[in-house]
Length: 196
Image (cartoon, rainbow, N blue to C red; front, top):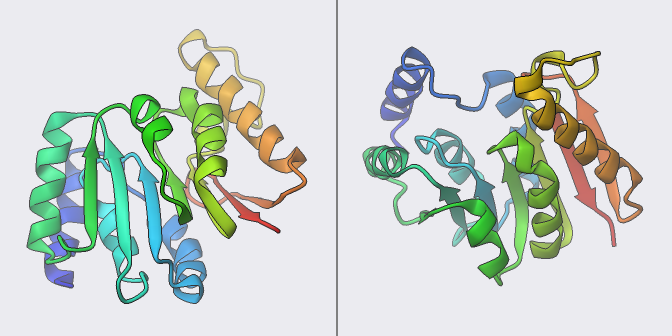
């Protein structure tokens, strides 16, 4: 992996205010991924490919990442970035709306990373559980959403997102087949392990 190119991708994304995974969130995920050595990772929300590239380092030898992105411009940039870092054989981008793509997937995944439309998190969870292997892990980023999720929040624009993120947290915490931690790193990270 070309680390210098990865650094440039990160800098450019930050300059252009493209939401990418925060360093502290990555720092929590890395040891878990390192230990798991996943064969298959599903990422919902590619953006410019930064997180998928970071995760690709922890895949098992023949491991692969499927990542879903709706916006054509982002897909183009992600493809370029993946090529620059020389991990194109490990990452496969599925272009389109995750709401339409997820129900068509049949593969089972060791790890799912949710980082897309906040209002759709409960749907993403339902699909992730269907696609998750035994002992698999679901990471959901931005789960505390600038602190709104745990606070009193009534601004109309974000109301749906906040309600659905709360619904996601309730669902993972009440699901007896999951062990869940909600961490206040970055913008909040939920880690749910599927226990057999």
